[in-house]
Length: 250
Ligand code: APR
Ligand code: ZN
Image (cartoon, rainbow, N blue to C red; front, side, top):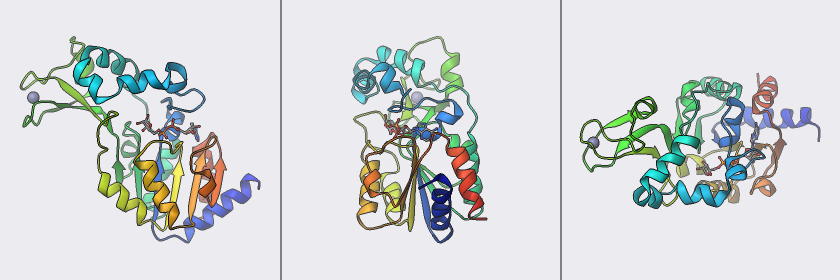
C-alpha cells in the first residue's frame, strides 16, 4: 500500500475516534537530535545493550555511584535540544481535540516543551535531580548538576547524593496506574517511534491490542507488536508523516 493511502487510512481512523491516545518512544526524539536506544544509530548499538543496562540501573547507582555518574553525565545529560516538528504537531493535535493524551517513555521533556498538556511520562525526566535523603524535598535541574565540580552531585540543602529523576532498570515505572488506564481506555492507540520491547509499557500496549482492532504504528523498522497493527507506517520522518496525515483530517 503506498504512503498516500496509509496517510488517508490513519487520518480517517483519527477523525472517527473520540479518545485517541499516543504512545511515544525515543524514535520521535531522534528528529530533535537525541539518539534512540535500539535503532540503527541507537546507543545500545554503539555502546552495547548490556553495558548500558548494567550501568543505568538502580544497583549501579547505589553501589557504583561514581561510575554511574561518569556514564550518566556522558550519555544521559541530554543536549539542550528543541522539540521536533512531530512534537509540535502532537501538541497542536491535542489542542484541536484530535488526540487526548500522550504516554511517553522519553525522559527528554520535549512533549511538554512543545506545548502538550496531557503528557504521562513513565520513565521520568532526565533534567530533574532529586535528593536521596528521605523527607528532603529538594529537586534541582541539569544546569545545577552541570555547574557543580563534584562528579557525584550533592543536595544543596542537606548534602545527600542527588539522583536523576529517571526510572533506572530495577525500579518501578512512574505513573504506572494512570498510564495503563489511559492506554486501556483508548478508542484508538497510536504508537510513534518505539520498538515496543520494554515492559511494563509494551505490556499495556499488548493488553490494549487484545481487546481492540484500532492500533496504528508509525515507526522506522520493525516493532514487537507489528503483527497487531491495523495500519503500520514505516517512516524515518514522523514530522513529515504527521503533516501528511493531518491533511486528511482537517
Ligand atoms: N522516525 C520513526 N521511527 C524512528 C525514528 C524516526 N525518525 N528514529 C528511530 N526510530 C525508531 C527506531 O527504529 C526504533 O524502532 O524508533 C524506535 C525506537 O526504539 P528504542 O530505541 O527501543 O526506544 P524506546 O522504544 O523508546 O525504548 C524504550 O527502553 O532503554 C529503555 O528507558 C529506555 O525509554 C526507553 C525504553
Ligand atoms: Zn537534601
